[in-house]
Length: 407
Image 1: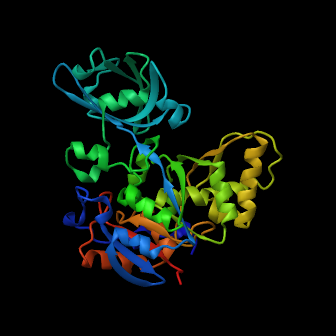
Image 2 (image 1 turned 180 degrees about the horizontal axis):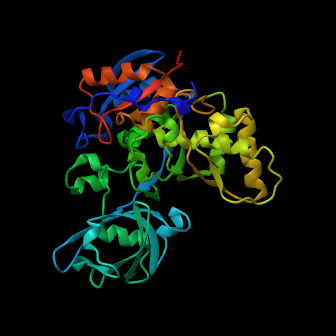
Image 3 (image 1 turned 30 degrees about the horizontal axis):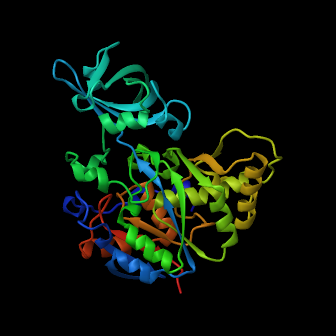
């Protein structure tokens, strides 16, 4: 079947409210772990992963850091306006986080009808002395707004501004207030680069001690960065996948990561989470797009949504990685910086990834399509098993490791 003809109704299941974890486990690595190996299903706890993996595996983690992207402004009349920062209007996420004085972002605005035309919202932090943040609505862009932020002291970066004025952007299905614990727990222990408005939740189960044990066992660990956008929560509303527009996300991969993958291409690559998987598979397709690269500087690289299913070119993984390195060398770059809107759905042929560590996802979501691309219709068995054995679902829920071809 052409992936565009997939009916999203075939990827539905019953998710009860009591199956959704509203808070994390007391200890990160003590969550349940569902293990899928070559069609067989069992379970234990997350620390068991060190006994499952060997030195023939490479883990790839997303080191993006969740920003406090939700800001609440209280007007003099008591009305509350919520602004959710999604992405900068121009430039990269990383550049925008280092902006001083002012910056413009695409934002969702809650209670927008209470925000009068031309009105500038003001937030003053009594705990930060003379700190003041102003928000001016510039224009509407479909269901979002362009908002210009300015602040004092002007030497603060926008990253620092959000740390003072923003709140953790918990997923909307939590339907609860943010608590102090969320600032720590809705962030991986290896988070480094500011830019995400949602956590790469598969990574939430790792602790520093567990990562050290994996390293001691000879298991390779690589870091990539993909800034998770709010589009990750957007359900598929069309009847077939052909009507769904995938959100585009920024990612960055250091040159030494490409080199490591090339030198160790006989090992099994296991992404930690769907965002790491999207990044890795996007690398392959960028290598395909660079087949005819002449050495001239190109515009920013992008992986279109349907390229895996419409492009007739076929590279070996080795050739794609070599193409990337050639591109970086020609342009004297230390990292591959690009965007991707790739959709990984049943029928997709994996070029780099051999398995997946992931949480349990929403019904009728593109993330569930990705899981099905990896293990086929067995996704139903996996989710039935998880429900029967009292696994918790979604962001703060339990985990799984999917190894479709493990001997």
